[in-house]
Length: 118
Length: 248
Image (tube, rainbow over all chains, first blue to last red):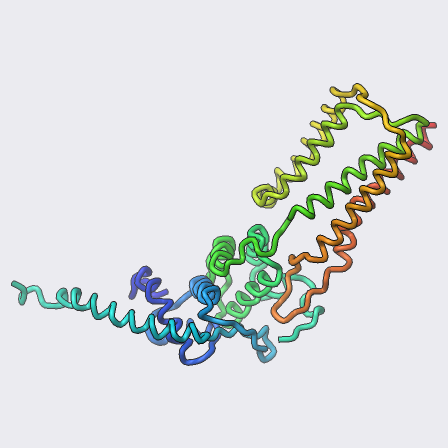
């Protein structure tokens, strides 16, 4: 992960929501998910971080997996949201939005130039 | 996917792009956590596809193999699902061990023309062996053996020394048993051991298979495992017979 830009603990907190958001677009495989997350600016998510998360989502019944044959390669493990997973993804996205609104109400105050404060 | 058995004869071939050391550590740790073979194959294949696509070494993409194996096993609830050495395995081998001792003891004394004398040392030694075998029920024992291979090599020599000491110090005969019933009992115990081991291995979930691959049933391996004690008994009996022929 991009520790220079985003602290590790922030990414750990938001990763589940982001991965489920990616999967809302359709079934996808591990490496492509990391590329998508990297593409939106979250930095390099390692396989060692992603797959245990996907495993937990699968164990919770939010994700189901399917191996699809590759072209001459070993094939790919596709992860897809279940009906419960889609509902959970929407719910988590809404809660994350509310969470960030709450935190921004507090932290945006830090963006006011020092000279402008009382 | 529908893969044929020949594609992955060796579990290592499931993940050819993954460094052998990392792959072996990963498999051993998942084994120690009693993850089922099909899941080990699935996780190994997942690592393989990721490594192949990203071009990163497994250690870079997944970190060290053992912590990653522990994390993935915990995340997926795989721990304990496969079972490694269960009570049936211990029972099958324990019966085989008792059968081997009884048969060899009976034949040795039958060749000498007398009843089989049983000493305190032999009974104590047998009890200690069965106790040691039963410790294999605990994963911690297996972990010690796997993680300390030098200790695992030294321990048998130490145990043999202890047993020789026990046999020598407690050599007074406690009772005698007629050789023929003892031999028959030994053979029956060996047969019971084969049956328990065979039934146990039929439900074995330890074979590492790639996703979509059908378990082979490990027919040859199963047969050898079930016949290990009887084969060792035949070997020991041959040795006893040769020694008797040479000395008489």
